[in-house]
Image (cartoon, rainbow, N blue to C red):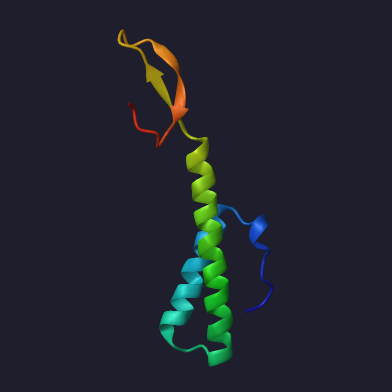
Length: 83
């Protein structure tokens, strides 16, 4: 597979592009068994890396909480429901 970049150094977009290439190679059916196993392992690691990057991005997103008059009252995590 050539030089494999370390996952930690990849941006979300770079990891996603590499994952798409891995999937394309696996779906082609042209890779020998040993390479397919390596590709599968790399693809799984890339998937986990992308998910971790998405989770981290979502955790950083905050929503503005407004009071009854519509004035900003503070911030809350994006996925937290208003009670």
